[in-house]
Length: 202
Image 1 (tube, rainbow, N blue to C red):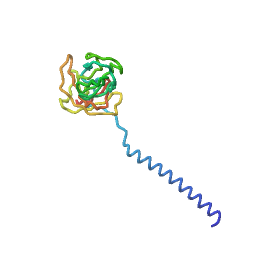
Image 2: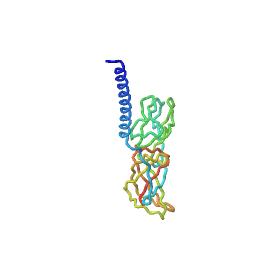
Image 3: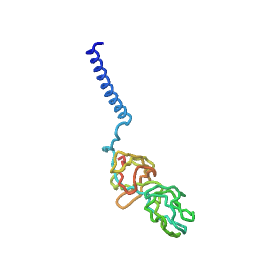
Image 4: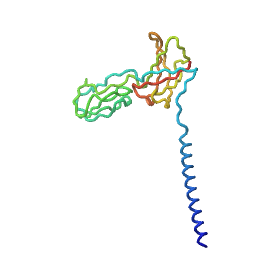
């Protein structure tokens, strides 16, 4: 084989290899984009709906008492954590335990490892409800078609692309209007104390 022909063949192979590599990268990127799917869209209101806001809660709080006497050996919860009834919150040196009195969200730690506690020592607080609530106020002149048990859309106002489904609870009359409570599962991506938006049908 003559030298010019050999050089031309080598150059052709290099060009084919570079083009193939670029095609592979492009195909991989396209497949990844298609697999990821479109970015979640924010809720866009129209004339058939109304958006109200409320602060996420769980029915208030109550104290969790040690109910035992002894020194704290370990603490097994973090602020804001959801615990089921009977779950261990702390262990004492004599192997007695502090447990959650019912399902709910825990507050700040009020004890530290090594601290001596009595039966009346407050270990933390726990929400009175085992689910999240978003209360929204309706003016008397504002009408909606939401009934107790209806599903409604809820999202954190600061994060409008993460929409979840809540359930409307019976409304309560208040001065100047009506308060509607939206109930959400405990695992909803909302945090206690943050502002949430609720979409209601007119």
